[in-house]
Image (cartoon, rainbow, N blue to C red; front, side, top):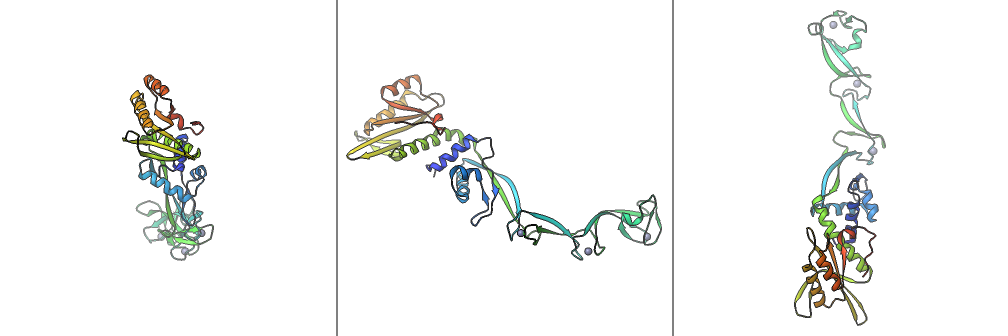
Length: 315
Ligand SMILES: [Zn+2]
Ligand SMILES: [Zn+2]
Ligand SMILES: [Zn+2]
């Protein structure tokens, strides 16, 4: 899968857009799924389901981290997210509920909204006409409750429903659908590796394929000496009786790739009768190694440069 040019393009895109939310999902209900990653789809020219599978595969391989992004609620009937939580009177199912502070007169037990006890300085119980003086001994503050504007019921726990404003249906609290959306981030530890190994290889692979070469990655080739060589990338093009072979090697070192790598590559290329030899290095060749490369006519490319799409690889 990692040889897929689309994957290489995705990685390039991720490297270029490390700071931007390239891998953010959007809710997109379709026949075959619910999520979409629009910037990736556009970049690769592929469908959502392909991107969803690709991102998961890359996560499994350790290239990406998955993180919680958002949770969306949507209508089970029409998929609309235009939902409104409505509270209803449990007795008459009216939505005409008014939030009010309720008081209780201890003497007669009357419970009602604060406004029923009068608005002035003095509070009079509307049921027994007694005056309420001391909070605690005369009357109690029952806190905020709902009063039904239709049937007068005092409601502590109103019925909760979701109204879909798009199709007008009501749903119980647990009946609306919910979906957790995840975004992906590039695993920084893998990113360095990608820049040095995967992308340059994919880039060379793509270029030589376009030039009409047949590519074998990690090819085993038997040389004229009878020795078997492992070759990072072997490109072959036949035209009539002629065969053009290119041996491509990839070498990286912490500071400089030394001459030994150059010599080993040259020996392999010579033994398998390659007409051209390419070496992709990261971060660079040592002075010594540069001289060997020039002497052996090995074309050298900088892996970092190959991360950029506009570099021309000419053979
Ligand atoms: Zn009273
Ligand atoms: Zn009611
Ligand atoms: Zn709906």
